[in-house]
Figure: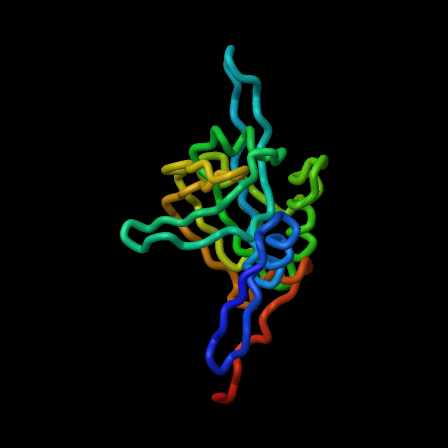
Length: 187
């Protein structure tokens, strides 16, 4: 254990990192909830057909404005990984505050997520697009970077769509929440 004195702020206790304490600390960070989708892929003699994939992610972020790039992380043990590993295009859907059920469906393993949530349509490049999201980015996958047990997927937005403006769905402390909306008064 290490302690660090911060003048005027008391002492901060730093502990060794283990999986449980790391996960517990990350639960304190509020993250935007997204659903990432990609089309199924036709197999060949070396690879079987792969079904469309979709998963809930809170690891989405913008990376660059010029050129425009975004990233999302996915565990390689995920049931979506075999399709995402080969995908050329993905859609990132920023969910609205009332879309907890969609987030839960796409976070559930062992189900056909697209049957469980019929509110989607086929977009460009065959990418499934979920309706009523706050925003959608259709991306070309430009790079995959292995990072521990996950892969960072870098995408170049090719097209974007904005739904109704509203409050985002957030994940915090192991559950879903949202913002309080706009403050009408200055602090």
